[in-house]
Length: 286
Image 1 (cartoon, rainbow, N blue to C red):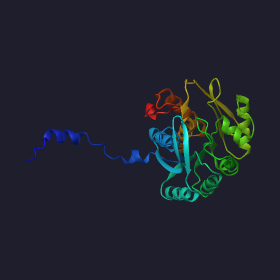
Image 2: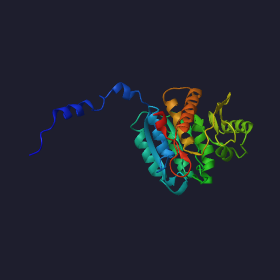
Image 3: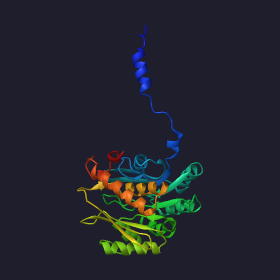
Image 4: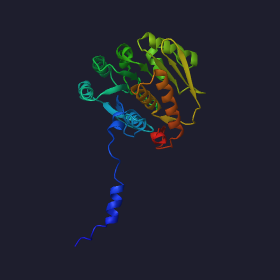
């Protein structure tokens, strides 16, 4: 015979049940979509974006453009998703969810850039953050060189903000970008290519962590204390955090400042994992 169930235990389990569904709180979470590649080690790409969305109070949706075999030490293999299936994923999300902001990350190939640009040009017309992911932290190429031109021609004119690091700014503008004045020149050039605003990220500068924001009229310089070490997923996390701010109705300046603060705090609170670059741990801000 089975032993009698303890009333005290049953009551305890009932009291520990999850909080009741609150439709007002749930509806307050904007839907933010990332279109990017997968990082199975969790440090960058789709995984970094979704963790950022969640810890910043947004509901994350994701369209996967590539599968990668990578970890904190590098990228060992890439499988690009077909453009037709990427568009099918986009249709499934955009035809159903009320997406308030979108960010793009790794797109991999020129034909995929063209397909994504075609679909986004058709709607829904929300604010788009373009993170032109070209090279991994460890130096491996993530996007073919032929994709740079359609990023310039097709994605930049759709972007509310483009967020290149120094190497990506060089690839997109065809000029050297390694100092503050050169970052400002690159930002001007990217505005000329059609972007409405540019954030040139200076995380690889040798001294202060300087980012340059330019909206075509005014330059803003954002600095932060540099945390020693090499980190993995900072660019993905920053662009995802900016997208959340824009989805919540923040101005561009507000969204960028809040995102910069968020990433700085997450970097400072991220312990070492693996044997390579330190992946960001969003739980330090959860």
